[in-house]
Amino acid sequence: MAITSEMIKQLREATGAGVLDCKKALEQANGDFEKATEILRQKGLAAAAKKAERAANEGIIGSYVHMGAKVAALVELNCETDFVARTEAFQTLARDLAMQVVASRPLYTRREEIPAADLERERAAYTAQLADSGKPDDVVQRIVEGKLEKFYQETCLLEQPFIKDPNLTVGDLVKQAVAKLGENIVVRRFARLEVGG
Image (cartoon, rainbow, N blue to C red):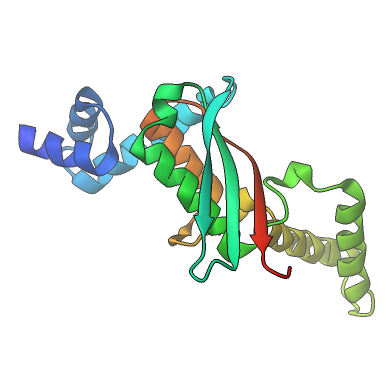
């Protein structure tokens, strides 16, 4: 199938990928727009993993104040250069993350930040709930691990479903931004403020 400049333009607008990457993806997918999009997405996520090691010392503080000014959040979002920090896409991401913090009330940015004592307390509580269930130990352990995964999704910002697209986690949203903007992006910290809270 012949790849037209209009097809390349549409794919570029949809994904933010470069012209050459769009052309190669369309050629590889034989003109199938959905397949080409998936090819670019996979390539972008692979590139994002490589960029995760790079230092992210620039950035902005994103903010969101909910209607009525009773709840607000601040999020420190870092990238590699001031140039990217000033882009509309980066600033939108920072605002979306602050909105996520207001709506979903995370306690930690990532699971590695959860104190070991808190994690053990959760694990012990889940195990105690299942103590009289009569289930074998290996089944109980699998259930406890499943409950811990749910705990991570509720309390860790990067593991929560994104409020604007629940099929996407916040971590995946950040990885997509890394792929689109071409720099490492790190959610450093956040604060949630509530009147009387």
